[in-house]
Length: 184
Image 1 (spheres, rainbow, N blue to C red):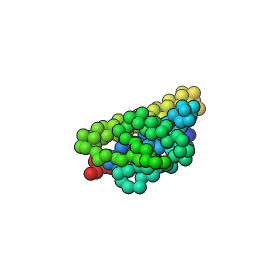
Image 2 (image 1 turned 45 degrees about the vertical axis):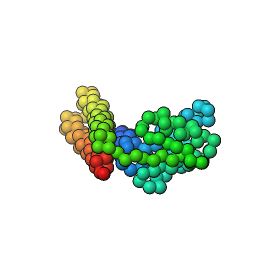
Image 3 (image 1 turned 90 degrees about the horizontal axis):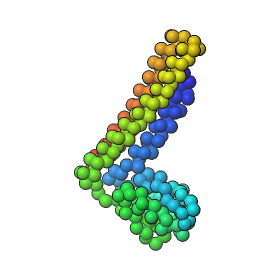
Image 4 (image 1 turned 120 degrees about the horizontal axis):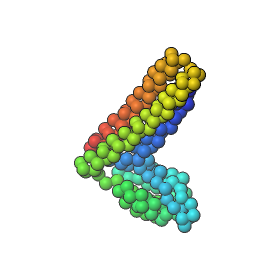
């Protein structure tokens, strides 16, 4: 078993899950809510993320400010955020875009906790898939007599330890995000 390879695959999965749950709206304004939204810019000739088109800041907990580097595409950015259909209503204020984050209702919080639970479960499934692929490799090497039975059990045990470690990290991220969602 190549532990470094397994860890890097699981870390990639963890990174994807982290950015995925970062985009779930809490009651606070954060740049991560909009930075990965893809906008058709320059008349639709390019599709770029908001973070590639503008500076994003959250000057207070209820507001996001987007300051495009090229002021001619301000409408494209606004349109992309509206089309992303994530419940945000951007308005153009001179040369910047302002998004006021409305307070969340109890129903909103419950809905986002369900979405979070689904994303966390998908992350665990992806980690287990990496484990399953590696288990298959170990089994094939054992059957081809490339490793001994002791090596097989040792590799499987180590693989399970790494898997448990990454599942724990996903659970920890989920609990932290859930606490943010339920905080009033």
